[in-house]
Amino acid sequence: MDSLKQNMRFVEEIINGMSDWVRVIDRDDNMIFVNKAMAEALDSDPIGKKCYQVLGRSAPCENCISRKAVFEGISQEKEEYIGNRVFSVMSSPVRDENGNIIAVVEVLRDITHMKELQQKIIEQNKKLSAELRIAKNLQCNLLPKKLPEDKIRFSFIYKPCEDLGGDFLDIYMIDDSHTAVYIADVSGHGVPASMLTVFLRSSINKKLLSPAQVLSELYRDFNNSGLDPFLYITVFLAIIDHHTNTMTYSNAGLNVSPIVFGKDRFELLWVPGIPISTWVDEPDYKEKTLQLNKNDRIFFYTDGIIELKNSRDEQFGEKRLLEVLLQEEPDLDILLDRILSHASEFAGTRDYSDICDDITIALVEIR
Image 1 (spheres, rainbow, N blue to C red):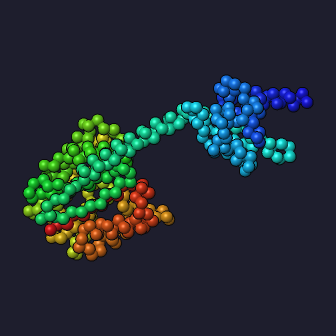
Image 2 (cartoon, helix red, strand yellow):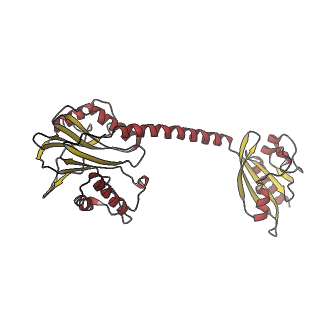
Image 3 (spheres, rainbow, N blue to C red):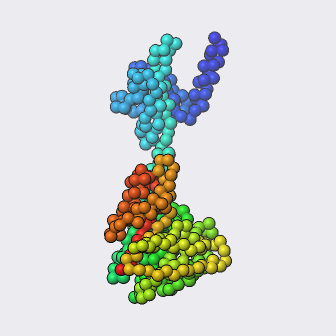
């Protein structure tokens, strides 16, 4: 008997040592026990009072979980406002030696500070979401606009895997007889990657006629910018001379080769080159020149489209891409939509938030 009393006192000391409120309520809503923390907070003797009365209420709570715990025989949980504080309340049935429910024990934890922090996080997320929408609109406004179509036709699809993408492309007139096109894939995704695309667009020299010279100058600007040395940009740049109907191109590390195709023609535009980075002192970019024919098409893309995977972990790959790309289709927009549709169907998704890489594809047609 003495041992039992000692054990009961020990348990009571444990409960009284808790900072959470603990109370026991009988089946008639009467308080039959409270721990020290709750008694001190209530500043009164609650024993024998109704559970709702000690909280300053005249009737049982509408969402009373103590009665529900008695009725269902399992623990119940809710949040409850008591004064200006918020509590997480857990109500569990107490059984006698025969298994009958004779009371419930409630543990009330003050979560006011946590709720305040949650609200701050919600407000910060709303602010961040609004800022990301603005940044996304700004980035999208940097993408190519409509150009005069007397010399070339141009179409593209840009699908970032997050609000802000790490892919980028642009097309611009250098002068009346030269058009430049470039496609880029920067390291990472999200805000850091988008900042690199802004750097790229603002730094690239749109007056030079040599792609290798443009990339060399961009490389120097990158190294003088103070950007994180772990960041880098891969860029493929082509300049079309409309007088000679030639295209000169250079590559700064883009790991996929653009494709020129037309009637009885198919060529990969492969040329090596180091990414725009801090990796070497002198990148030494090479350039090649290719003769173009009327109605030739140049397909630019980043690796996001070919690296799409299906449920068997197979990649869409270059072979499947080419099978769609080389189909007869006079309209550029339709052909690009067809490529994206086939790739998405292969991956079993049309929700681009499920895709873990940016997808950018573009077509240029010589008029």
